[in-house]
Image (cartoon, rainbow, N blue to C red; front, side, top):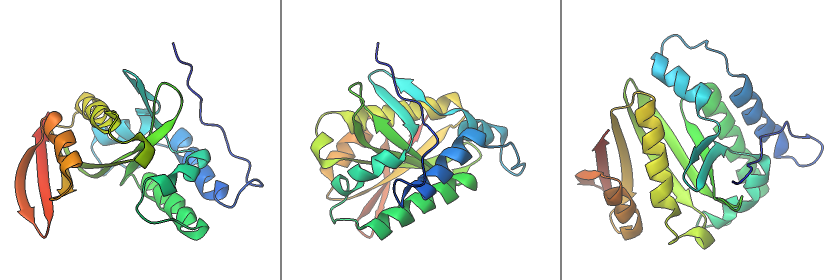
Length: 196
């Protein structure tokens, strides 16, 4: 059985990104039930998802050390300022209970990508995902989406939506394998939905 790392409070003297990432860890570990305008299931989702073990994957909070893999997920290199902005946006979205940015880790403790849960309204939400280039075509995206759907169903979500570029066949395969059905196409984007 694999032993997974716990998120630790970062040392802000190490790296300029740590301050923003520390904000994420403080929010995630100390989140209070203060947002009474959102359904109970959403508050519960934001409080209890960390960590979530699913078969050979671990869904966990994004850590400062994950920033080194971000360039491997995007088609253009990200400079330090862009990474800092990304980290701050993740922390702010989490604090406002708008978006969950979740790191995906395999059984070898390798960061393989991220999944985000956003546009959360009652029992409906939208997901997105991006895997590191060197981790693509290994089934991680399919398994990560499956894990997130299981997590969301357990927290009362009944409908999950997603989007993909029309020419992104790999993403289409991931979504179809997880039961998503194409609802419409507009401006080179395909819109998907699955009932849980």
